[in-house]
Image (cartoon, rainbow, N blue to C red):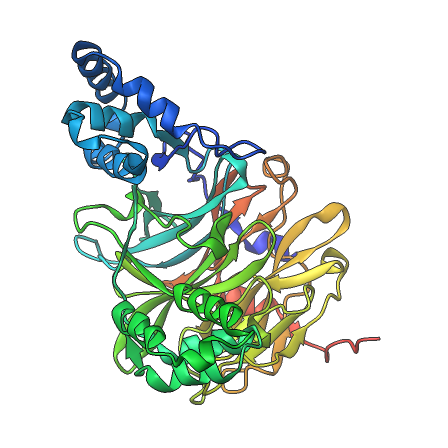
Length: 495
């Protein structure tokens, strides 16, 4: 019965292997036994004659120039990263330097393996639309070689009615460049608390830093630490923790003339070196106006960490860690506004229960209140959210996911009290969306999954990943969805 509520649309987003970025390539460093072969390669390139050097560089630009933005600058940058291995770098011609940069570069197809787990927010540009239309930004989890995830985007126009037009995604991709950011002392303190690092060195650093500080102030503060503190046995480890916690916050910016679909948020710090996964975007409203916020899972190959994105325009992003017991797992989703003066988020700290967590005065997400445990047959393995709560007159609409037999993922829904979101008002009696026969096969089979939808013109617009093979879109009349819900029983007690 509930499955008939959701209407699938024909428009989809499929992985496109032509969407590539240029990354640094150092021969030998990709092997199990790391031994850089950089110096020998540089020597071989440097010994080419001028004619061969020029020919090779021209061929490289002919083959790859149209696929990338400012490939010349990228080659210069990659040359700069390895020139310390060149004994007489000044003797090399500009053409040779560029060619060396080309040999230390490679293309990476950001979504060659999979494209999935979308979220939907209103686009910052609403110009040129007709009545009943809304332009939206679609965030995407892109997975490439080695299962490395990055965050990409697409644009679409919803309406009038059920009309959906997904914009073309052609053109060279651009990886954001790290820019200066004024870091927050309270976030540094929260990060140190997270790793249980509290001693005289950390106390001295936090006392000396202003509420907002730049990198120069941070380094000056560390340089002014008394030698008596640094000489203690805990000194080196403490400094490492302080530097790591400080570096966890950064900013990345894209050129103003890039389109949204050309921007790629690529892993920039060690904590996310193996992937930025499952971004849940929401347009957050406060007294200063709307701002885009998102949470995502950072993965370094061994550990996961929850991190937050903030942006005014989806062009410049500030990235910060999320700390506290409520942020210690995947699937944190922020509410779109404060509720009763509290900043709230959905979470799943135990790996199987949807919970509600609150941000305290020290920027730590507190121990969650359980909202929904696995109950129905289609969700008995685990439950979690499918994005940020959506405000309706009837309550906070929470899209959920549940995992059943054969690790089959489906999407359901809950309704939370508007003023007291700790209270579940109602739930959908069954799944809203399950993988159909056309969606069950893919990189990760038998999965439908979303990181967030929105309401436009009385319809819930739900983007979803289908077995990590493509992204589809479905709509549900909000009034019909709410009317189908039933009063929710109290959560099952844990054994």
